[in-house]
Length: 490
Ligand code: ZN
Image 1: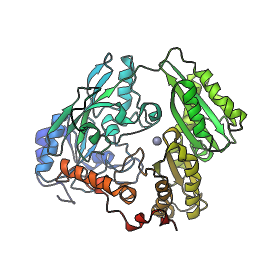
Image 2 (image 1 turned 135 degrees about the vertical axis):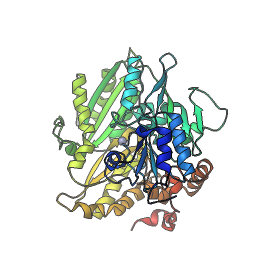
Image 3 (image 1 turned 90 degrees about the vertical axis):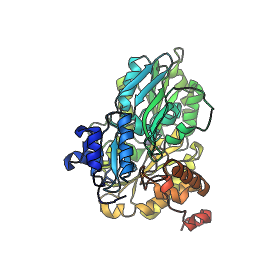
Image 4 (image 1 turned 30 degrees about the vertical axis):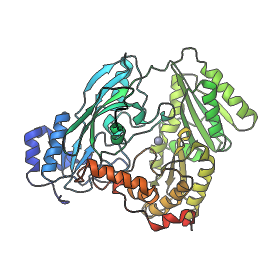
């Protein structure tokens, strides 16, 4: 494998198979495939192929393999860990963006068979037109594509109620490293006739095979929905409030988004963000309840959940959205945070998970560890508290040098991730491993688990052609100091 350029003759062979339309080499047209959204990585590839169907993907993989070139699968290119970014000029990007067909939509069976390049929003709309509901919901849903959603096992805004991308998949079609196509799209709800190959490819970051199509489960659509913003005097009451709302509503809480006051304030840096209607509290919880039960009384459920907390002084105030437009304004307080954080300067982000019941103990410890590095760093904490998954993000101290702050990335990672490790949590909760978390995973993961993953990689991709240098199988050995347990703090 060459690191410096695609192998000679590969470009021409791909053009002959895929047509000129299916091969991109001009620098200006390559640029969007090489730009990673957060600007952390710039892809080095000089060759992008755009097959129109699964056979084209398989042919491209075979040709790359015959020429000794590694491949990087890419669908919406909205990932945040460098998973879709080619690390070397000799690697070929296989874009799935032209695999756009919905092959089957069976409302009665609740099945949708879609190709990897369909955007998540298109699939949500198709399900809705058929009177069904595809529950996966992500901030990037207008651009992200289902192939990447599954390859990263994306979580998102309503994983609390409906599960991650994995929970929506009843079948897959996958192009393997040798160019063969494994198909299991029937969509059986039960099938214990062997090992679960489907779940092996989901969340594997395109490192074990390239997902080209999937069978997704569709649900009855929600009939009623309520959105509420709760202002909290402290972090502690957040999870008990979520659990009370779940209990009172018959498990209708689809989203429970925690936001620190600092995170809400960063969202306000965008022009279109509405003002915070409940200013002055240190923490906020955005709850969305939705149900397909026509008899459900969501207002009563919310009141019953909130009243005891209010009496106990664990709830400063609550605002229930009376209309869909008001609900959208409350949601905007949350969805504005990532872009608002960009406005505030350079950031270092941590996508972590602990047990939900450990959140209240974990967050102050992690923030203290961060502030021990620099007391002026600006934490921006928000995320999916019901799942125990937080974005414990850091923004540079106001007025400080961005580069100097980013140069401390490893120090901040250590501060946060050592605390995550103490709580037996995950340092790669919903965005995947890719390049960004590879070494962090290598530092903290169970060595036997990593060894098993490396065996699986070896079995499915013995020549190392699929997305090399990324993911858990590419993680280096565990540093010796990790074995000292809690002694790693200094
Ligand atoms: Zn998230």
